[in-house]
Length: 146
Image (tube, rainbow, N blue to C red; front, side, top):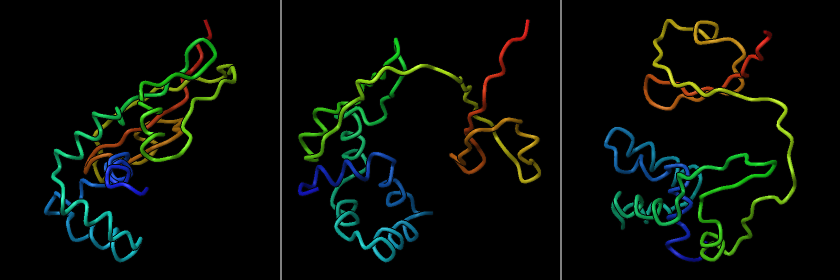
């Protein structure tokens, strides 16, 4: 993006700015952002702005908003029109109608080094380590056979 606000949006979308403000991750954040990805201008923005500035960007564009299925279509409360204006890219929800064929449930659990995938659950569809000792995962909902 051409503007600082646009670049801040890129860092804010997936909390890419947070490592800079955490002393435990500051060096690794700089290594990946500057040395590996060669995004020195994004690192500069972390130096220039506070963590509250990034949080305000998240709030302004509702970047933590959701996309959901409603009456055969998708809806969102993310401010796509405003993002499109700042980033100069087309953002829109598809107009197609969809048919739900599967449903998932979403689970957050603490983990320990002893746990395995089987101990967490079966039928895991996706899994992410979201904090030091937590996982978020989705699994296929079991159909009722009554």
